[in-house]
Structure formats: structure tokens, C-alpha cells
Length: 316
Image (cartoon, rainbow, N blue to C red):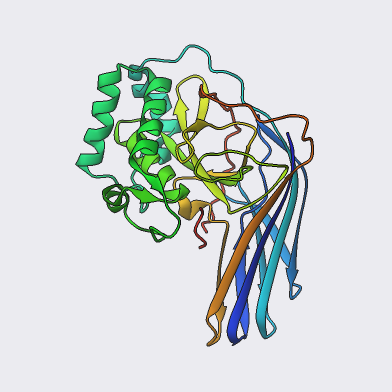
């Protein structure tokens, strides 16, 4: 599927600010499931752009506006070609997760973080579902993703960035980043390496993943990937309770949201900003209708370069 994406963010300050420094992670990645065809970013007032690849393999566009300004608009435009990942081969047993080389390679995706800090109750929920199902690794990840989708109701504004997943689960509602964080925590709590993914979803309804027409206006999206020994990364979307496919456009991944926020910055001055962010996605080949995905598929990606730099705007 060929998709053209326009991600626009506007800051309107109630008083002029002297300077702002910002980092944007909006550029789609190129991997085994998608190919970036073109990308550009514009800023008004104009600013010098510095682009680099961070520790997790995500493109970062850094820009600073040094002159006094009351408005700041950032527009990232991209064209990308997506496809469904290949179907998984025979799934490995849960015991394969204990391989020393596998554990060492995925150590960073097994540890709790600020957004994925689980408690014993969450770990017990994960164990009960996997043990009852008698699953292999793929089955276990699918079961945990489905559990998240059954326990949380999608409700914009129900949570704040940084809200503990224990409180999110107690509320029973949240947005896509909460679904993704809970799924990651459940996986990690039973020894399955998992990572948070930031991206876009070509869907007219964030609750169902459905499509109506060739143009949608949405927000950035989030899902997760789990490591399957000997096979790669299994991407699933617990918010919409489906496997990741050609509706999904990946920007990047990390341990949690803090590693891949779409846009974050600081400014100097007394003004307080009002932020308006939106994503417009247009399907350029309407003859190819998205398929209904019921079976998870695996994604292989290159290992991220080892140069660390960390990066707030809530994903929906």
C-alpha cells in the first residue's frame, strides 16, 4: 500500500518566547515490511535542521528557533510503501526464551522502565493466561495482546503521559500508548523481550482500525513488538486487537514512549503554549483494499546502531 502522510504540529504561545529547541521523530523507518519513498520537514519560523539516527535506530530531526516567536509550526511529510510481513514459521517453545545468547541480545527489552514498571499482580495475570493456554512464544504474545485489548477501553483523555500501568489497568481505559505499555509489561514480566513502537495507522477509527475512504485524519499511533527466538520481532496492535500489517507505518521503537516521542522540546520565556497536532494520511492506490488480519506475522529488522540519545506529546 502506498501512503502519503502529513504530520502537522502548531504551538501558539500566549506571549512571545525567546527561544525554543525541539526534537521530532516523525520519519517512517525502512525495514522488511515498509520502504520510505520520500520525506521532508519544514518549520515556521525557519530554523536550521540537524538530523541524525539515535541509539534505537530512529531518525531524529533537531531544530532550534532562536528569534522571538509566538507561533511555531512543524510539518513532516512522508511517502511510504507498506506490506504485510511474511507469515511466521513454526513457533518456538517458551523454554527457548532462556537461551543465554538470546537473553543477552535482548536484555534492554526485558527490564522494567518508567512506563512499563509492572507489579506482581500484573505478572500473575500474564502467567495465568500463558499457563492456561499452554502456548508457544507466538501464542503467548498473541494471548497477552488480546488480553490487553479485552481489559482496556479506548478513551482519549482518560490518562496522562507517565501514568503507571498499574493505575491504567485499574481504570480499565486509556489510549494506544497505554495499551502498548501494558502489553510490553505483561510480556517482559514472564521473560518475553518486548519493545514499544511509535508510528501511524491508516484508519478512520482508532478503536477498530476500520477504514472509510482514502483520506483519514488521525493522531500518531503506538503498538508493540515481541522478540521470538530464532525468528525476529512479532508486531501486534492491542488497541485494535489485530496483527500489524500494511495499515501500520512504523516510525521507530524503544523500551517505552520516552525513547520515541513524536515531538518534544523546551523553550525560554513566559509564554504558555496551546498545542494542536494532527496527522493526515492519504492512500494513493485505492484499488488495493486493506485485508482483515487475524493471524500475527513476524517482522525482521536490522539491529539499531549503538549511539544513544533520548527524547512530549501523547499518542492516541
